[in-house]
Image (cartoon, rainbow, N blue to C red):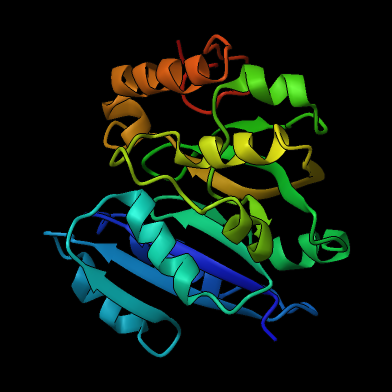
Length: 241
């Protein structure tokens, strides 16, 4: 059985997608087996042509533009791994990702997350982010949880209904899934290693849809009887106000 399925969803990311894919394909050898699934969500740039170069290394699916939630669920439907790990198409895995996470993947009742570095559009490091150990209150006050690098047991993702597709490209789809888990008593395990590079640039959803993300966060937390706030560990809003 495959240990980890990496799912890369992409839309018009020709400038970054190849570096993302190579970071998955060129992982240092570990005791974990993995597969790569790529979902092109209706790109209109050169993304599809770039993806075809990797057809021997990955399962590639091309679909009409339905949003990152739908594309991610498509990947989950096809995943054979015990765990799944999404990677946004402008982010980059550390070459030691599999080596570093291997000792931690002991339980199917937890999700896993690590530290990361922020990079700019050229790949230069902006800052190194060390996340805290799991805390229910801290995550509720974070207001987001990065998709890239977070590892979920597939059985948990299936149990909690995968990603909510009601609002296309809501910007908080991963946070919404994490909320379902932690409010039902599930916990995360912090891996104290730098596992990936999160790209900050003007074309990202978190930048272009900042107002809409906050609006969706307000509606999401209102349903829970809570207020949408962000703390210093929010990847897009908390440190970049």
